[in-house]
Length: 171
Image 1 (cartoon, one colour):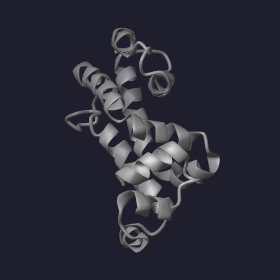
Image 2 (tube, rainbow, N blue to C red):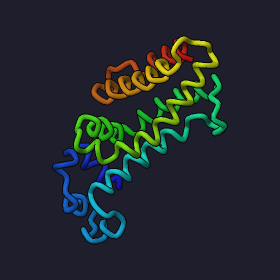
Image 3 (tube, one colour):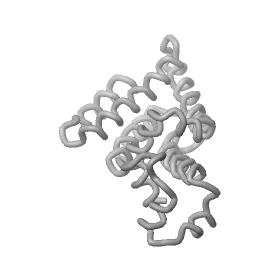
Image 4 (cartoon, helix red, strand yellow):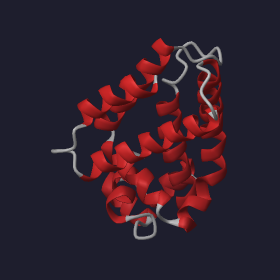
């Protein structure tokens, strides 16, 4: 999966073949098919696993209630994951920009993301903000935007300063 992730992120989904993945991993094409039904199944698994890892840090005690402490932890861990897994996030944004590929994972992605959004909405309801769903969606959009900008320019993007701003302004 790591080799497929690297190839998908570098060459794109359409330009990466199962043969290329097999060659890079030094295994047979048939062995890949023992684990994955298709190339589509492989990318779906890679993206789902990556998102599960990312969302596992959200609402750390999994009680459905996000505290300020848990929110700060989530933001800090999000930025650490972004720095540690730039290849995954490069693939994520590439998939988002390709409607045909996005269709392959859209359903699974929404199943993973919507509980996150609803928990954020509840957090902002407890804060008494007007239109808490808009705030929840804004946090998602901000994190996407920060991630995309960091991936495009990791050497000069002020990630640490932005982390502090998000914590100070939105928590």
